[in-house]
Length: 144
Image (cartoon, rainbow, N blue to C red; front, side, top):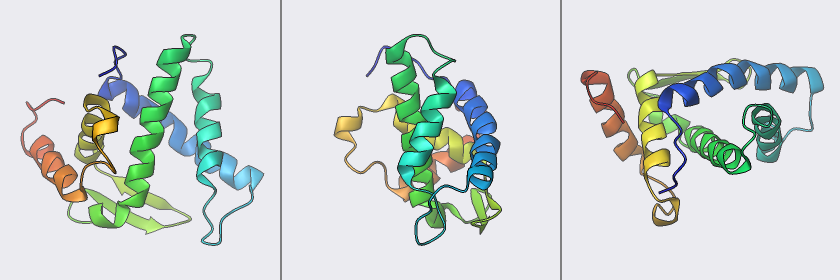
């Protein structure tokens, strides 16, 4: 595991700041979109890099946090339909996006910041994430 830490509160601050920024830029710049109306994954990575560059002067720290953020958000996007149940997440539409429960974010953050990525393969199963998210929801004393 890396010696760099990425606390959950810091990750959530990035989510809260980047989500509206990415949405606003996507609408204003109208980048070339995929057939389904989404923007290419690379476009988001570039925007996340530009956001994090002034925040972290240490390149290793910046790269670590950028990678983890992008992995978490990409995994969430890929499995959103699996999480669209109960109070874990709700998907509205491509235009309005979705809502994600804090306990789901906490579970995803835990998996992608505490495990050796080379040993994870394609990542945890959506069921494993949901089980951990349920534990975080039910027991506020459980910390990642």
